[in-house]
Amino acid sequence: MFNIRTYNNIAANGLNRFSSDTYNVSADIESADAILLRSEKLSADIITPTLKAVARAGAGVNNVPVADCTAAGVVVFNTPGANANAVKELVLCGLLLGSRGILPGIEFVNSLTGMDDYQAMSKLLEAEKKRFKGNEISGKTLGVIGLGAIGSLVAEMAIGLGMKVKGYDPALSVEAAWRLPSQVQRIENLTALVSSSDFISLHLPVLESTRGLFNADLFAAMHGSTCLLNFSRDEIVDTGALLAALDSGQLTRYISDFPRPELIGRDNVISMPHIGASTGEAEENCAVMAADQLIDFLENGNIRNSVNFPTLSLDRSTTAARGTRLAITNMNVPKMLGQITSVLADQNINVIDMLNKSRGDIAYNLIDLESEPSKEALTAIAGIEHVIKVTLL
Picture 1 (cartoon, rainbow, N blue to C red):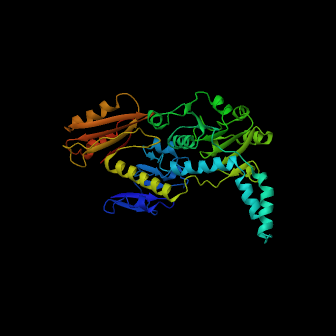
Picture 2: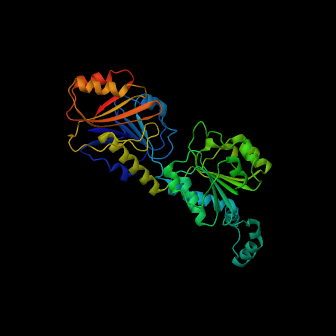
Picture 3: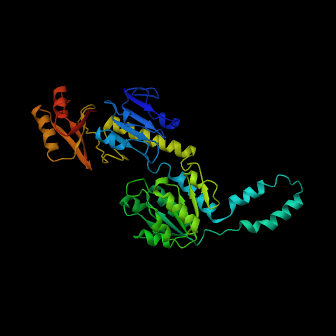
């Protein structure tokens, strides 16, 4: 029986993936095998000797102590792409709000509470509507920074709306490149993209390399009528530089899903309460994806969409009975695999299939065995220097 501790409200469709015969799922579990959460801020205290995995039903993992989990051999999963459509649709809303006087127009109409004469109201609206004149987005240039699951959908959407799209992503994966519409013009220089875009949409994770990426130099490169949309992460934009650009008019409008006190009440800022993934569909997609990843990991040791471990999947051998698979995490140093297999050989345990991959300082191994190893063998493997965690599946 596996114990899954939950935080926040996890969509029922995700929780229903866990069979009651195999899983105990509750918010009150003390010694959990895995944690499933959304936005709860976790500390390193959640890492117990029994914990094997943390799965966040969402893309960002800034609320999870990833480095501490890695040191303890705990796999951290996220769900990239599960909420991509929800964010894409909100970016479309941001594009329209940034190009036309929709919000001021609505506020003006709602201010006419004292008028009860329809003809007089119609005449007033006809006279005042020029105040809310905007521009169409068709024919304008959208610069998309970050071309992953969300960025590629945003690019595709913009092309369908008649926009010209330029993209920048120095870490573009082969998989992401295949998803990207051929009409997207790849730009290798970020300053060049910023200087030639009417709208810029950010879709990057928070890393040391992206924190404060949008700084004074990039704002200075804008042509003076640019709208910046940030539905990615607040930390990517330098707040001081943003305020200076808004004050000087170098940036025409900032539309963000991350309100800050300094930006509240400004006419050239539209802030939303972090609702990019707040749709029933996105919450269900994320919960189901997170649950499926946990199940495959806990039962088979397979890893996909981890932010700290390598992607690794090994089919169960047809000749190996259930319960004869070892999952071993160790530091990525030489001669580890030889030491592990030597222990198995000394115990007369035959290896029938195995897979080994590494990511940074961490290496992960799945080993299918012809017979179940003894406690002594497991203890011997766990005692090898640089071995972090040994699990019999």
